[in-house]
Image 1 (cartoon, rainbow over the protein chains, first blue to last red):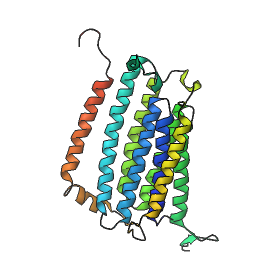
Image 2: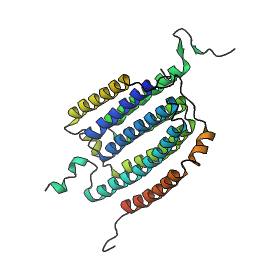
Image 3: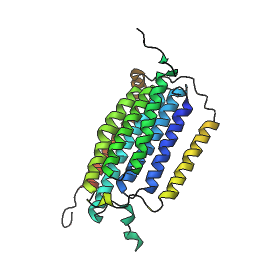
Image 4: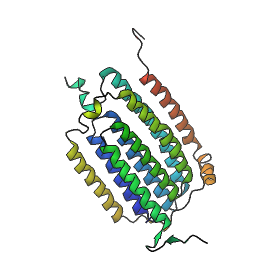
Length: 103
Length: 178
């Protein structure tokens, strides 16, 4: 099981769907960011699995995964500071109460 | 006495046993992240999830990425998320409704997405090899700092820009014209 690419890909697919559900269903902005992190990690698992099981990719899979890791860190920083900045203005972390532009 | 190749009685390889344990932990804690009521616990479940993922990276033969996962995700991003949670939560928040009204359609959509991914994976021939190829740290460093040195430098500039942007966005506005 651990020697088959399919198992890793399906596992990553499950993790990605969990992240999708969290992003669509949660009300809290930080929960939504955490769901995005889950989805990013699922994609990273896919990249690593491809790098390990496709001989022509080899090392490049790990290189791409490391770069994705750094970009994910940058994304988390900016996303969380945006949430904190909005919270300072609106006094709520719930996204369905961010409705100023509706009026 | 040598350790046997496979688990006695049920003939399960050690790799497979580890894979089953880690993937169960991964999926279970992932579900906890999106369903738990208390958002601090969501953050802690997210750390468990990242740890299981680091274990999977090590299992599939990418030890340096596993180490980077522990450092970056468990060490940095999770702490950042926990700080953001503590800065933005009011006491009333956990008692209120956690999900949007569209939670049920979202669950159905996510299940369909997962099913589609599984079907696609099963129907495709990836030309994969029988056992994972291990990526040693030495060869990875050679490729990263030789062939991919430009992307590496661009990522460092991106991180610097993200740090400056983060500070600028989150800093408190001063009274009067800035």
